Every structure is written in structure tokens, then in C-alpha cells.
Image (cartoon, rainbow, N blue to C red; front, side):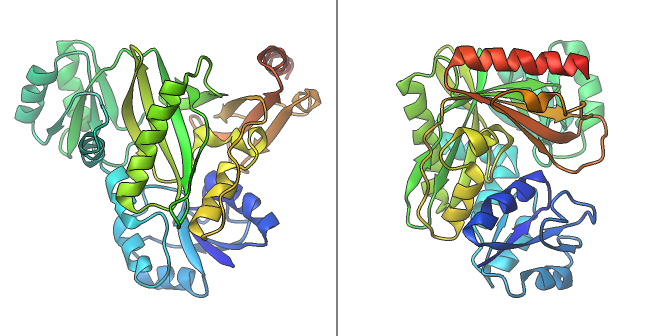
Length: 364
């Protein structure tokens, strides 16, 4: 079978690496001619609204998926009239707009931070009176890795934030003094079968995921069941097939939905070595109607992103349980260039291996 992937970043690259042992073939579509997945398989470069290029991409494919949630929903709908496209374009429409997304989860009965739409300065003033400070002003669309948002702690910061972000649809959200950030990755098959990985703890730096700990320390059955119920309900409501990720704030023992990603996710990279079946393989199984694989963990894992620059990596390869993934990207500030996953059978050994990794960075 030949799978088409909209988006050619590192997520698509890792998807292909997971699919080749299953005998799958791939074709990628990305506006950037030097996309990270471009040398992994057939590749078509063009604008998402260039229907001639989209048609060339789709010719001869058996199914289409995506590794990037900012693919225009119109393009996904156009392709869905011709080929199976999973997850559904409806999932893109929910995930691409923070207001629609928050409203979606509230209607499903799950808690989110307080929020209000902001289309004008008057709207912002009204939302601030309702929600108060501190708060976070965000673009409704296109923001990721901390982009397109401003944290408002004091009244003096409001005018600057409006100058930076005003003039487009926005959302104001209450700032949550969370204890930690968690996420769940789960897969749903075409037949409705469901498998979830354990909740993981995420640490962000300047809005970019820096480290994931799997499973999350101190994970309780109650937190896991709440997260699974949330992602399962969202998938069912959307008629979803594929992998979905939901990010949460944990605050006073409760989970508040932050956002969803209708795709494989950075916080699931640890599954390549740390679970029986990786998120990438399970995504492909799901969208192609194949049985889902086990999501059981193989001990304890920590994933660390390599951002902006790649350290000298030869010394780190001598660390037991360490797995290096480089994406073939040119370095630049804030860019994810690769990741390291460190695995161990117990938390003590994991901490020792993590310490050895940090020491190897100081030697490089």
C-alpha cells in the first residue's frame, strides 16, 4: 500500500521509518522543497491550494494522512472526496482554531481554562473584566511552540500585547498556575478499537517542549482514566481514525484540557523505543484499518529535544539505553533538530543514564 502524507517534517520522516518494516510505501507533500522527509520517499512540493500539485500528489495513493495540523481543511476535504483521508478533515477544523477547540471540549463535558473570544480591543477589555489577570492572549489560529501568544501579568502589558497580536481573531484564556503539564497519546482504528499510552509529563522551555518523562511520575489510575475518557470521547465525536494527542494542565488534582493535536506528537517520541508499538506505527495501523498494536511500556523513558544546535553526539552513543534521532535539518535558533530518548528498567537507572547524558554534553 502507498500512503500519502501531507506535511514533510520530522513527524512524517519518523512515520515512514515506522511504516517501511510493514511493507508500506510513502509519498510526501510539503510547500518547502527541503522538507525533512523529502529524501525518505517520493516527494511533491507545492502550495496546499495548488490543486494541480495536490492532484499529482494524490495519484496512485491508497490513503492519505497528515503530520501537521495546519494543513488547510479545504485541501483535506478536497482529497477526501477522492481517497480515504484520516483523521477526518473535521478534526483539522477543530484543532486549527483555539476557540472552536475549547468550545468542543466544553461541550463534551471536560474542563478547560476559562476563555473568551477577542475580535476587537473592546472585546479584550470585556474579556479581561470577566477573566481577570493573569491571563494569556493567543491567536486563534496558526500558533505553535509558544508562538502567537502573550502572557499578561500586569495591566501595563495589555497595550503591548494588543499591538503585537491585534487585528486577527484572538482568544483570551485564564492563566492556570498548574503543577505540571501532561499529555496523552492514543490511537483509534477504523473499526473503533482504542489503545492509549500512559500519561506523560512535559517540560517546556520558551514554549517549546524540552523534555518528556514517561510514564508521568506519580501517575494515578484516576488521572489516567480521566485522560483516556477525554481523548476517547473526542475521537468518537469526530469519527476519528489515527493517533490523537491531548495536552493537559494538572491543577489541584484536576486535568484541564489545554489543546489537542490530530496527529502523532512530539510528546510521543519516546514510544519508538519505550513502548511495544510506537505512536507512528499505531497511527499507520489505525488509518489503514489494521489491528492496533500494544501500547504497553518497556520500563521508563525520558525524551529530550535537541533544539537550535546539535551537540557532539559521538560520546553520548556510549551511554546504555540512549537512542539518538537526528532529523537532517539545518541548525537555527528554536528549531527542533532531533531528539534523544533514554530508556531503563527502573527510575534509578534512568536517572543515572540521564546524568551521564548531561555530562556528555559538557564534554562536547
